[in-house]
Length: 260
Image (cartoon, rainbow, N blue to C red; front, side, top):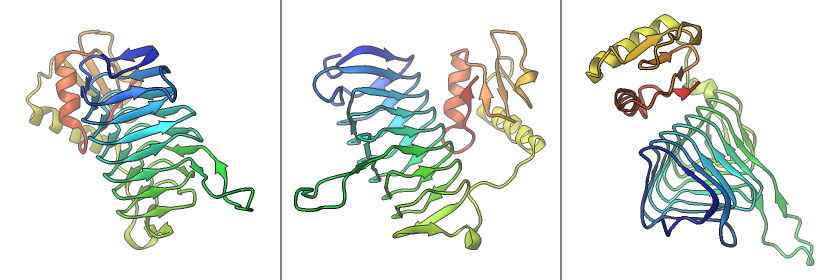
């Protein structure tokens, strides 16, 4: 692939990278590029980073720009909308199951003003995004920590750390969870099992190759079966046709599972 330049390159099973995408380092080859299984990278995406990774079933939509000197690591099941900017000059880590809506900007540095003249604003700081975080769209995110399951409504400007499972809105964004509730509500294992069994039935995928269980400790030993544990949202990755079809059926809004 002429559009990918890396000393150490790993591209997973069934992943698609548009011929118009560019993946390289800051100055020539990247050191490490890791792209998981069943990943989609769309037209005119630019990934200019010396150390970049993205997990299974993630999607980067067209004209997204990811850049920076320090590592940028993105987990499984990410959805990154078109025209998004993800900066990793200060280092960026994004967890599993995160959604970044179109035209959002995630920053890990602030620099431009003339420090000789006395400009006070010059910093590089890591941006840390936990699991199940959702920036709905047109969000601008400073180098903060977004804790698991937090959410920012469309057009939010986020300047401070985000509390777990709180919903934010505004400029600067503040929590509005006391008014509208939280992104996630507690769901029992029994309810999760019921939903997953219904999803499997509705998907019309063979139930001989997919098994829904409560806990990881309920996994069987049959390597021909993909086991899905609802308590931890983990599965035994076999890369069978049935498993891949089921994962694609579940994503993005039904259920998100990561490999054990």
